[in-house]
Amino acid sequence: MKRTCLAIVLAAGESTRMKSSMSKVLHPVAGRPMIAHVVESLVNASITSAALVLGRDADAVKAAAGRDDIELSAFLQTERLGTGHAVLAAKDAIAKGYDDILVVFGDTPLITAAPLLAARKGLADGNDIVVVGFQTADPTGYGRLIVEDGALLAIREQKDATEDERKITYCNGGLMAIKGARALELLGKIGNTNAKGEYYLTDIVEIVRAEGGKAIAVEAPETELTGCNNRAELAAIEAIWQKRRRHELMVSGVSMIAPETVFLAFDTQIAQDVLIEPNVVFGPGVIIESGAIIHAFSHLEGAHVGTEATVGPYARLRPGANLGPESKVGNFCEVKKAEIGAGAKVNHLTYIGDAFVGEKTNIGAGTITCNYDGVNKHITRIGANAFIGSNSSLVAPVSIGDGALVASGSVVTQDVPADAVAFGRARQEIKPGRAKILREKYQAEKAAKQKK
Ligand code: UD1
Ligand code: CA
Image 1: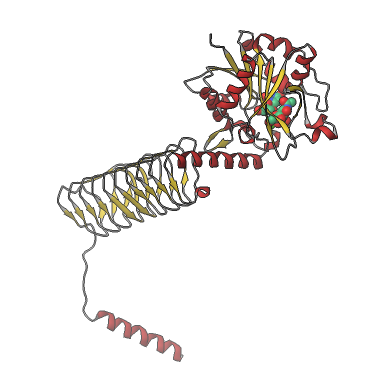
Image 2: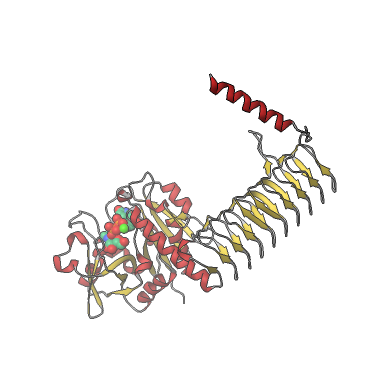
């Protein structure tokens, strides 16, 4: 029979070292709160129940963690007395009876399903406690794993460790599996006589061993277990996340010329045979279909880019931009909440917002949809095969029919029927010889002034 599991996610810390007005687990990695990354790893490990232990910003953390595919309960840890105390905040959930209890830290957002599954396997193999550790060049600040003959003897916190113990580079990653049937009993025995005066969850190892129980450590890569205590570590975690995701995308058929300059969001979807040039930034909610090219220095968020469309260089796609197949949005163009039809071109220095642009329509350089009157947003509709001359202002609400032509420099305030030409500008006048007369007049005036 399948073993049942409760994950306990610790997220009640003060986040003192983050020096922030919000809980650290709300700080984003790849555009979404750290805590959401942790919960996703639980889902990927097929865990269906989790208890959140919350303190600061409890409501916001709960909201950030929530998703449909996992049942979350929330517990408040009103005093921050250490990780051992924090786990016991969820004692009512533990008391429901699970085969496995998994303790996960809210500040380790790089975790994946693999170490969660490995920790549970350790319990299934008959151990009482399984700690997931990692080897690191710089163990400062982490609890050290004291291992002998395959058994985990103890975890020693930095502040309590001897000179020799501090040289150990095998560290506690913060992920621990506890045999459910013994969890409450063992947790209840944790005391607080240590350098910090805190209830250390890590003491559970020595407690279980003193009673003849079995504890082991299993190793996972450092990149999965890096904890976030300050903003420098947050940036390091972001860098690891980005590197990992770029690699996954490249292996799945996306080309990146300078991957280290491409920044992805947690949900960026890029299909096979897409080329991403250097210095491209993806905010949340972007989907790129196959064969598209994203040229250098483009910024996309909440946008859908169709098959073989091209974007940039220097384009900005904002939420609701939907580019049809083989369409083009070129340099210094901004598109927001707008459909760009198949094969349509928006190539230079243009703003298209709250608009529909039909298939194969050409939008000339410098065209602006004037979508905002200072109070309300209005819609611009442009049909298929239309041609909008350069430097036109389309004052919404306005419609331009299929095949219509708008003369350059027009300010369009009335609807333009299909196949019509619209001029919305002053007529040009020619004054023969007038430039020469003016120039001579100005020169004479200047000479007279200089004589004085
Ligand atoms: C902890 C471990 C250390 C390990 C490291 C890994 C203990 C005693 N130490 O140290 O062995 O190497 O993580 O990153 O467990 N929290 C609460 N309530 C509390 C205290 C903490 O919810 O009263 C939460 C925090 O929000 C955080 C997690 O527990 O998500 C870890 O707490 P933190 O203070 O960061 O522990 P470390 O000192 O990093
Ligand atoms: Ca930590």
